[in-house]
Amino acid sequence: MAALSIKHSATSIWERWNGWTPETGFGDPGMNSFAHYSFGAVYQWMVENIGGIRNDAPAYKKIVIAPTPGGKLTNADVRYDSIRGRIESAWKKSGGKLTLNVTIPANTAATVLVPAKSADAITESGKPLAKAPGVKFLRMEGDRAVLEVEAGNYKFETRAE
Image (cartoon, rainbow, N blue to C red; front, side, top):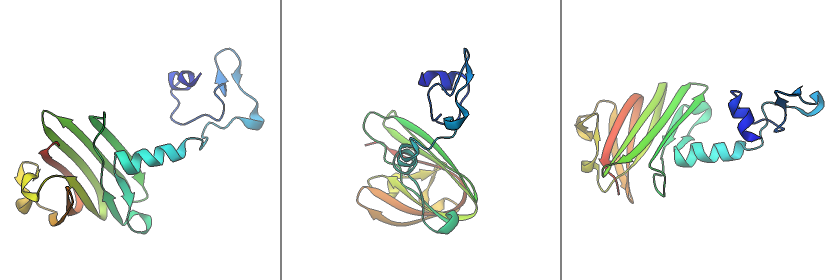
């Protein structure tokens, strides 16, 4: 039944699998939400852990992007529409390389944690971090480079471990 909601272009979790069917139409209006929170915690976990998008100040004035590539996942593309605009974190592991594309909305800033052995191993749009506009290397935290970035679009690349 879950596939039915997807087949009919649902963009949310329905409270009841049979909230609408081709045979009977809409279900009981007393309990038939088409925007049920049911699995909202799972969505939040995916946004915050797989995509690494987290709020770091009220109303997303500051953002943290700290994805956790690994396991059997080879890529993820996560978007969150905050009050300040769309935040994106998309990563892909391929051919021994990790690519992390990040979008930070206007009038905000972000801390981005890039999995890497060192800051020298990372490029942004093909440039070393030291020459990348809007990017400042802060420090290494274990196997992640901690960067401060201004609003904008970034493409970080490093070796995939």
